[in-house]
Length: 321
Length: 205
Image 1 (spheres, rainbow over the protein chains, first blue to last red):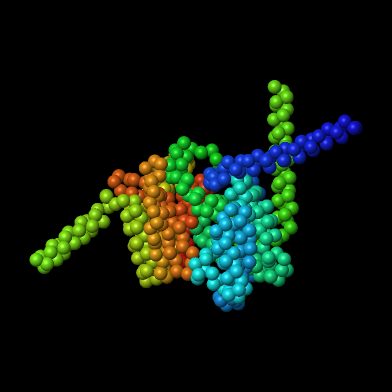
Image 2: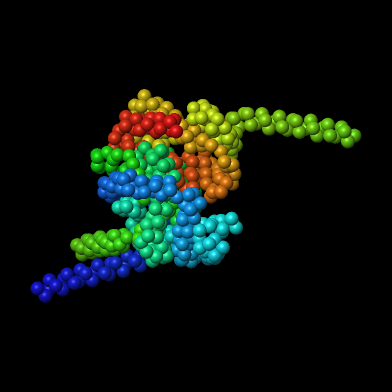
């Protein structure tokens, strides 16, 4: 009994140890590969949970069709354009608190100063953010968030995940979204404002959603690829495309690639998910639910456990030798 | 004396202008940058007349510029990846045909009106294996500019567009994932049906 107990404790210890080890490896790896996050996109290996993702995608699509889209259409119909723009600017301005934090975390100090100025100008002269004055002074809105910061630090993107209601994300995006939510003042204001924030996000995603609907042959794949490429482009500040050579495609198409394994046969009906607004990057604002927090913890725990198992296997292999 | 000089200058200018004209007309010698810029100016022209032309008019007007500047056959081949080899010759031809139509249709649909947009050339660079990337951006009044990077390959003695990357999203990679997925999950006929559906939808709006 005692021995058994001891055994399980040592396994636990090992897990903790391997967890720490992984963090160290990640950090070290990050030092070596900073700025080289480009090569992980556009491989179906990034989507091992495609079956489940497609189901959630379909669910999100129905939610969007029956709830979010009608509400958003009504909002757009009754609200005058200048008010819609004001609402958009207001939430966009609040996001800049998070942008500045992430500027600093990514050591982009001059951009951080600019974004601080942007926030200050719009919060004062811009009537609390309702008017985007800074844009006319030449201070464009920058897109920074904690997911990008993690990318800059060298954390790999991980698997592509479609979250219920919240839409496309990655394993790295979940802790990122948790942080972004915490750093967004909207989170602390209360329910009616948060609802308006969600409404605004859906309304301003209208164009992107329409484009996907028109252009996509397979909306799920279209959304996945454009989301991953777009996130990658943001994380590398547009430097990723340089590595994108046609020759890679040609070689692949000649040699044949084994990247894709689409096992499931159930055809997905075309449609769009509620939170496909990757073009408007509002995912962070809506992610104020506890589910994403617990999910991220679960994912982290699971990945540590998996890594622990791998290390265990390695050790037994070693012992056998 | 001065008059003679002026005459000479005028003659010289005419010659130069003529040479430039001939140069522009001779597509065989067009550089990658010229191919892109010519296509972009055609696109802006169509946008300016967009409402008047209607969808059918825009399609007709864009048909040649798109086919002449894009390497549509090769794009169609790359887009289906290794599945290309599994297709019969008729299927390959069919795919190239509908794909070309889709490409023109999506231009005709998405560039339908004009509100002061303009393309600006940024830079040009050579890739490792003889390709050229032309970096440019589309200025939209009152909106953020959109980055357009064109990848070109030499075909014969002219350059052809093979991929367009808009704000970091590669059209070729996107289509490739979609097309190979559909081919693997649902097969060739469904792919063609879906493409035709898209062309049809584009033509309605």
